[in-house]
Image (cartoon, rainbow, N blue to C red; front, side, top):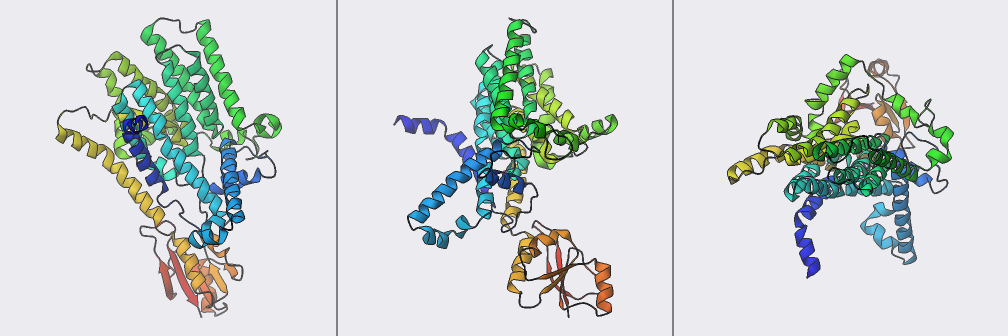
Length: 496
């Protein structure tokens, strides 16, 4: 009976977790039998490589998520071996053949692992909102993350951004305890989890700035200790020490193979990442900062969520809110806006770089959702305006994940028409990944103009011409359109 009561007590956060997991796993096998994202093989191959050597021998990304994937893979391989021992392999293959289809099954497992971590991040988000404000804010913040468009989109891939956010959010949870109490334990755990975040993706270490913000706000609010006291400085030092320990725990060869780790001349070294992103001048930096906060990444954040975040500074002019609540919002807003500004200075200003701001943004949006109105009509209207647009964006992404990519359709087409020709002319590198699956095909890369010239002179072998752009003067055999599908439009012309 006690266990049932506990489950009912947390029914809403459990429901939000299930929703988050559902939208992150729909279409999770997208692209199979191909891996179209160029970064996914780096994670899966690195994890599988630990079977032979625990040193990743490259530090373009830190290693924690690789090791975690290796652990999950090892468990799966052991489970699969057990099925063989029990003579269940044939039966399982007949039902779900992908379980023995290497390496695709390991990409699927890694994607599921990321989707789970992404969905489970709603739990620390809920705990932070509840600790800072109340359980309603915690639940609404968790719902915001569950329906956060780019977080859901990224959770479909075997990448490191979503796991980084998971560890970062736990770091913020322990840091939120620093706001109310001068307890060393919070500094230690906050530093440790920010270290795990940095050991998943280097920019996750920027979360340690939140510790400084929380410490300063607590002193300003309660004024019962000095800003630069020996006790406070020692806690900063200990937090920093544990963040380093957390990082080294997940990326041990940053110390054991230090010479390679600090290289900056190639992706082998960690410092290469910091030079590879580049920097822009001050004017471009300001322009990119403004665009990132307004229209640049509105789809990634969800228009309504981003609007509420931008409007959050008005809380400081509201007389209806308590001083303590204002500074709790500041605890979230200051790191978020600093991180926005820092990242917007990169020459390569990409969507996933802003993932580090997500926990702060969703908590602010959860607080400013304005669901405190007593009138139900107003409540439902606001809820619809805030949550339906990002939910629509997620459903659109999931729909595209479920539908076959145009290159997968091309693969199926060639597979069913292999008897027509052994020669394939193609004009786009994006199609070569499909042609690599057919070892018997003679492949010849040509541009459209060269192809037409050779065709007019009748000096081409019999075959098919594949291109992503329509060609005038050629007879179209088939077209694979990309309306409501991922991948390029593909045109097929027969060569007689």
